[in-house]
Amino acid sequence: MSDERRGPMVVGALTVFTGAVLFLAAGDVIPLPDTTFGGPRWLGPVTPFGGVLLMDQMGVPLPGWLFSWHILLIAIGLFLNLYPHFDFATFRIPGVLQRIGLCYMLVGVFMLLTARIDGTRLLFRFRPLVAAAVVVVISYWLLLYFVPVPGFGAPRFDPVGSWPSVIDRAFIGVQHFFPYWPVDGQVVFDPEGILSTWPSCFNVLLGALAGLTYIRGTVARPEITFIGAGAVMMVLSVLLAGLCPLIKNLWTSTFAVWSGGFALALLGALMPVSVRPIVRRALWPARIFGENPLLAYILVFLAAPLIDAQWLGTPEAPTTLRNSGQAWFSTLVEPRAASLLFALCGIGLIFLVLLVCHRKRWILKL
Image (cartoon, rainbow, N blue to C red):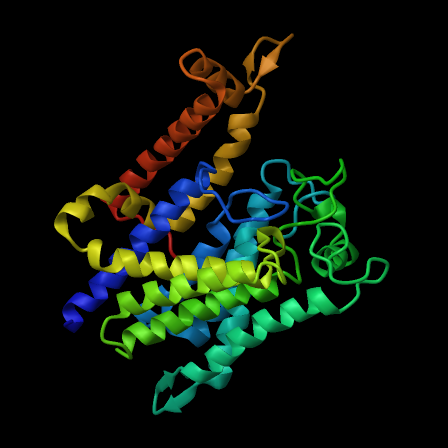
């Protein structure tokens, strides 16, 4: 395949890929192979993967970009967690954007330290990235499976007695956790905590490896390679679930491998079809979301408190836009479908904003 087609193919596939997952994750309609606690959210594994691949594809000047980008991304995440009450005593400190920023920083520093300098260019090395990816998933599994947690023992893959939960409670405090997934009425863990950021680096390393493979032309048909490698990773992680359960909220090693394999396979499948005119037109809404993913994510967080604020109804019986909207849709369809229709309406409004930004070429980039 010519270089003229290779670039648009992968950029188009990444745009559609990111947009489709953002669209579905916003509506909580993607099922996860999560064997224990947790809910359907794929924004975590998808965004680091696509972002690192785009970084390598576009030739971003990594050293200067790395630290300013990750600090700004973490700051945006903290602001969104503070909004709208700005209660510093109880606001959530971890978050998706904070995790992405930390993962990018850690992997970016490693890539810099292991790169070769060729004149004025940095040449990233493939083998150290492979070794790092293997070390990350194996070391995290060894910790959870063999190292006893004080007061709980080993192995522990639960939200109360696992190493990630215990460390987060000690260093962050439950008052700064995600409050909406309590265990027996108590908030005891956060899905984007300190220790579970370590295995999340595997997904970023995988994105970097995919980017290097594609750009250097290591394989003749990268899309076939991505699909095959992704399928193998997904099957392997399911087969190993008896030793290491697939748990999104702990980002267990098998979940890291499974989510990375899914991302790789889906990207490979989209690469040849996303450039076809008919498919390109059909996937146009996903491209609108995918070309402005950070803005879409921010808009969702800014809109959520407004949807759940009690500014409708009467003073004696105030209600929220969410409750009112779902109640109205429930007169037309069954409650679960009503909830989905309300979510789709919210996504539609965000789509309209992104469409205006698309036509004006207002793209939020860091």
